[in-house]
Length: 99
Image (tube, rainbow, N blue to C red):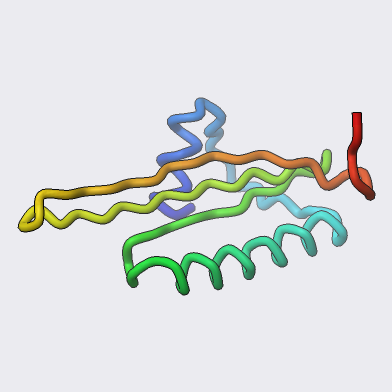
């Protein structure tokens, strides 16, 4: 497991050490792969190289969890910036949810 992934799972308190590899259903995994590809494209086009990292986790209940971290430091010009976000979405039902 990547150090980045380990850190965020540890912070969230949901880290469990195991030798088992989770095998997602093909539909959920296709959403995860598509989201991973889209995020990779977006982050590579929007940020300088080696300034961001992300991961997309999937679970069998249709939940996808997206973890994004970005940091930019320019002390010579007296500014810094960072972005850390954890987002969850459900892909188990199709269509648009309306109240």
